[in-house]
Image (tube, rainbow, N blue to C red; front, side, top):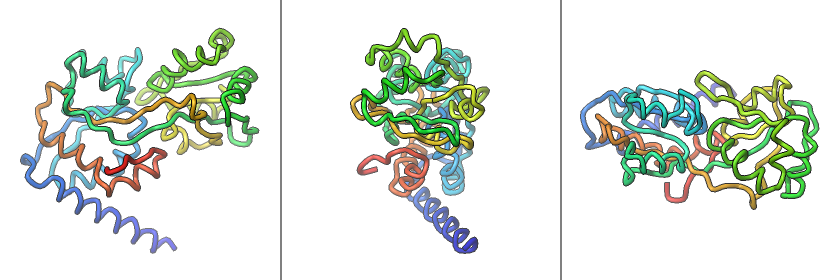
Length: 269
């Protein structure tokens, strides 16, 4: 069984490397490509990056940070203080804001995958009902404590969804914003330790954290349309190599990795 699994992984990596070679053909000579990336797409990126580097000869220099928020590690904050990046991989709405500020090239933005917001409880705890808007509202009101991220999903919950449900005031005293990686942690880690009863974040940031049980995604009526996006920065020193990376991350061969990470591959990608 282990030998078969190892052969399967080796075959997949071989196919990814071959796909990368085709996509990168004609790109600039080997370069050092600086990437800023948020947590939601990081598992996909970290699995695919070695194949891209092998096929292209490029070396990826990676910096992590939230797509938005007041953290000094947030990607917009990093760019505004002059940190180096050729490409950003982050929440699509946040990338749009960077485009308006002239920090990324608006015409370079490419959607990589769709993301949904989900909820977890501590492993072994009863899973509450969040299958409808009414059920979610009741679950939130009944919860002793609620955790959400300091980035895109948490911003949506705290500024839009709680108010839409008419319970923003009731949640204000029992909700907690969790700073994410690199210096912070996933929301699910806080729930796993029992510090919050329920936690919300992008599904891709929840499902691989030990010590929690995944409850499900927000009801469709409340689920925002969120994409993880790649875009070239306005100050990029290696724009062609950065474009080659984005092409690779949107290739059909990348789709199984995207799906495994808890994200939805896009049609035609």
